[in-house]
Image 1 (cartoon, rainbow, N blue to C red):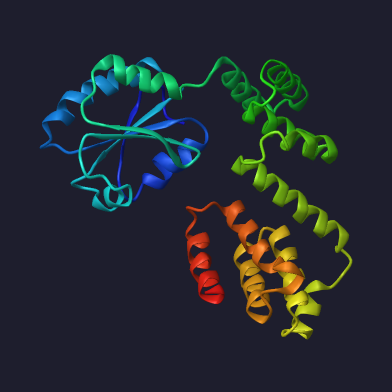
Image 2: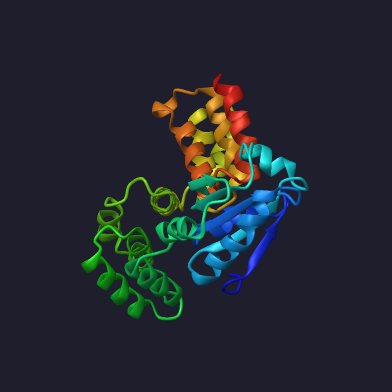
Length: 281
């Protein structure tokens, strides 16, 4: 993480890292600007001053639209300055034009984490070193804020690592739409599948029966459990090609689960999304 108050100058090449990836740990405000733009020169010092007040809670990234047209086009920047806030890889709030300082500050205030969110973040940073203390802090946060997503996810990870999946599953049901919850549920399924079939030769079965959608599906899921995602997608797509309706579309659902794990901005996801679409449509 960059130091508090640091402004990052992103490019087309670094946008995924500087903005999308970073936004999974804290909100990222992106100022789309250009040197010739008068209102941009007005807004620039204001937004940098306000961002510095929020320190490490909200990141500020600037992107020169003249030098980085691909990103500007992707986010449909038509007028500048354009300001977009990213949270978990998605645009969460935005405005266009040189707003006065009080309005810019209110924009940042809406993005900044609450006291409970800060406590959950601190617990998450502690989890690797001291999971017992982290668990206590996550539970304290949930007493005050029962649906705090960061605390739920953090506590669920600790419980899953201890083998207490029932409580973890109940916790995760509080925030079913959170992408991290989907990923955790997928991983729990994959780990359970790998345990149940650990003594079976699923690869041999798939090689001996290359035209059997079930065999290809089972080996694909095992590869996904081993985090060999591209190889898994190859097997699963072959299962879809052989019989897209097998087990109520199990292979297609498994492909979508791998997409969730990798993230929709992953180049692997984009490539295999294209290939899946060509099979289905």
